Image 1: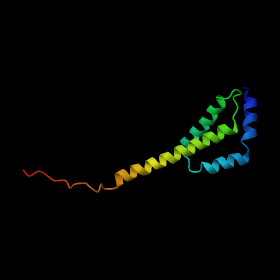
Image 2 (image 1 turned 120 degrees about the vertical axis):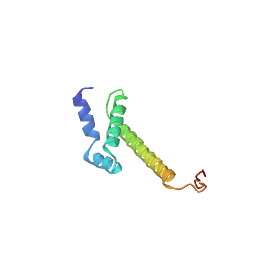
Image 3 (image 1 turned 90 degrees about the vertical axis):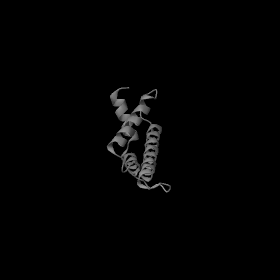
Image 4 (image 1 turned 180 degrees about the vertical axis):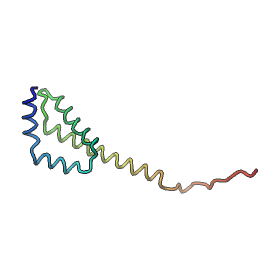
Length: 98
């Protein structure tokens, strides 16, 4: 697809309101998370016959990014719980008598 057609398609989909909605949904994302989401949008466009960004591609990429972020947050919380809490059945350490 020629660059001009791609740019025209992107401009028609990525209006100011759409960009603001994406920004609101992805508030707090790291630059790496945003880059991954944009890459997913680009990859979804490449998977279409016309190589054009679609609203479905945008929505799917945002949904996946939000799920990944939620899963990462849960994993971080579980990790913190594992290492911040003392096991209840932990036996005191004993030192051998010499």
